[in-house]
Image (tube, rainbow, N blue to C red):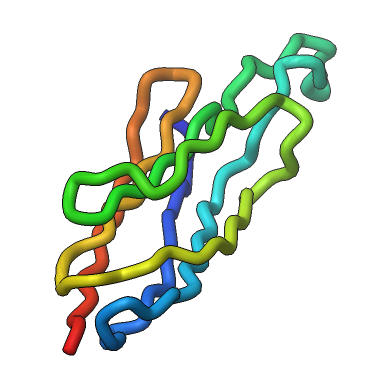
Length: 109
């Protein structure tokens, strides 16, 4: 597990039925490619977020595969249509098997 990994998401708390809302996500992560060396010349092990998903009430909204060239602290902004109240679930998958999650509710009037 990478040190100091912190997922953050921004979801509107309310929307009207049929609205398209903007979701913003950022995860603090070093994203080591496995090609850099430390001060002693040893390779720093690869540690990247290799996949990001978002679900709304269990239905997949977005599924992104990330490659080693992605910068540290990957940020994603995307839109989703909401027809009912529910919960967004955001999941980041790390090379080392770690999984980071965050959930945010939205109320639809």
